[in-house]
Image (cartoon, rainbow, N blue to C red; front, side, top):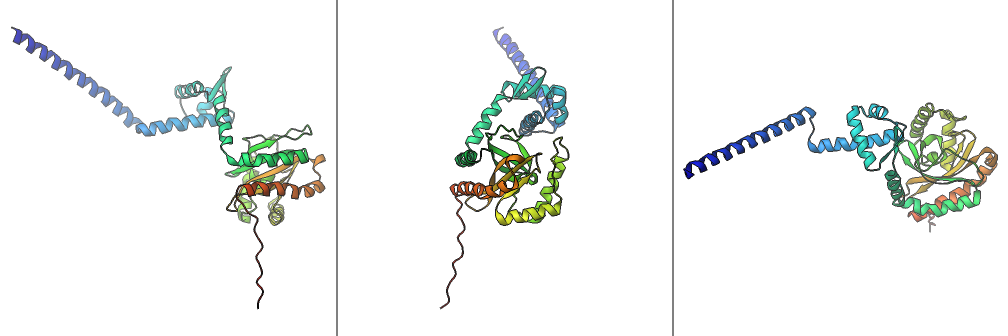
Length: 305
């Protein structure tokens, strides 16, 4: 009797194991089917989620404020958009304000750390301050980012003037003094390409500058700038704003950044701009030397005997 009971129990346990294995197989088959439908490996799915999260941050930075506009920018469904946005809010990369979303405090923290980890800003800051104290005008430091200038430091002037520029702001290279300073070593063909890119960008904005040079004028100016190692912004980026800029080089001699002094026309007549050229160049050279650049030495003439 005991042997029969044990056999019955063993049979029931075996049946439970079979059922459990069948359930597991069904779940695995369903998961495999879903993966096949999505055509994504777990690694690819994770990468896609990451890229979508970054795309949401970029969309929020460019003005997308609600789920509908963010979803339209990403091409995702409302439920997917809501899930991703909620995760970013929880991680403090976004913050919810009223019925919309703005960039969150975590990005400010990371941005501050990123700037601190960029040696250029730390090296350049004392020299920017020297220019600020001497000129009382707005001082900028920028680097190239594609066809744009990315401002990485700014010291506002003390004349009570306000400019659109800010740290983290991007502007077309060929329309800014800093951008043109970083173009000095480029061939004239590239000047043309960047000027066209600048015109395309500025054609879409509401603050169109009053002075946009044609290509021939631009090349003439750039040729003079390249020979002199400086650049001007003659209201080409913002109405009534002028600036004097100079390039910053690294140990290899390559232009890696540029700095500028900017102000409005009453404080920046052409005569003063010419006077500021050596002043701006001096601080740009000082930063370059701290980055390892050395002033090229003139070739020594050998006397024939």
